[in-house]
Image 1: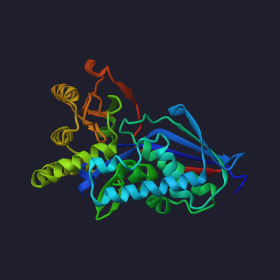
Image 2: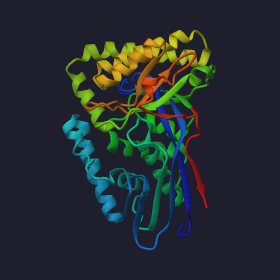
Image 3: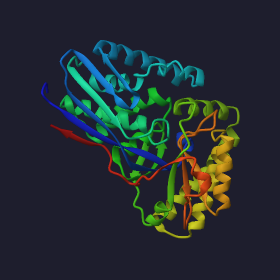
Image 4: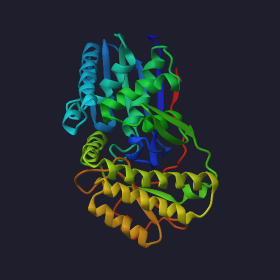
Amino acid sequence: MQNRRVRASAPGKLILMGEHAVVYGYPALTTAVDLRLDVTLEPGSEPGVAVNLPQLDMAFDLDWQEIRDYTRRAREAWERYAANPSAEAFAEVGHGDPAHLTKIALGEAAGEVDAALKLRVDSGIPIGGGLGSSAAASVAIVGALRAWLGKAHDAATLDPLVLEVERRQHGMPSGVDHATVLLGGALWARRDGDALAARPLAIADRGILAGMRVYDTGRPAESTGQVVSTVRDRLRTLPDQGRELFERMGGATRTLRDRLTEGGDTREVVEAIRTFQRGLESLGVVPGELVEIVRRCEAEGGAAKITGAGTLTGSAAGCLLVYHPQSPGPWPFLERFQAHPVALGAPGLTLEIL
């Protein structure tokens, strides 16, 4: 174990449809994308973990006892939040620490280890863009450390460990993000009680995916966890309206699934994306400036929706998924945004032990 070196590579993810609704038991369609995050673990020279995060321009040392104590405190704070969910309670879980996710991922995977390690994370996934950067980091760090320790690191073993990391990062996540990163490909997912049921989706009409483009509107002002918690607070006072809204959004998700797996009229794809986007707007997670951009896409005969949790304030909401049956741009009004020419259906987590 002391001379072991491990490389882990995890893809980004894209929620084609199902944001927010999946948290409440409605279906989601997701796909892994070929933007990847790589983790390297190797023996260090001093006890603890020397962490290098080039994407964040950060390097620091962590003591294992510090990691364990931090993980325990974050778990206790999360349990208080879970008992009485609110945006205020979630703020106590630990997001003020820039090393939050790294500490939690190491703490959940390591147990009582006191080894000397060097951890490096190289990411090609934009942070805060709705492309699963935190899920990829959680999966890759947990998977790499388990493999380095010589412990089980199959998807079934990693899933509950990564879910705990994602809970500290996002509050009450559905689990769909890290399931997509772990398994890769395209998934049809739905919560069944506290568990997530996810199965691979066989795509029959790849022309639909080919008609989709991804544009980066900028990093949201709030984290996914903050947005999800605030939406939960809002819906608590309007349960009937929330159910009606999610029923419409769930119907749109099923329509997109059927067209992807069976083919058919692409006008139904356009209408499904428009319907789901209206639902996200009703939840208050789409800035007014982006609503105007969406309407311009619709005027061109296409459809657009944010992908990811969205935002509560500001004008940026992560990535925008744009679809047109013939030509999804680039329209001039989209040129202000960075395009991500991603391939959908990428492989999931890979681990290499050297």
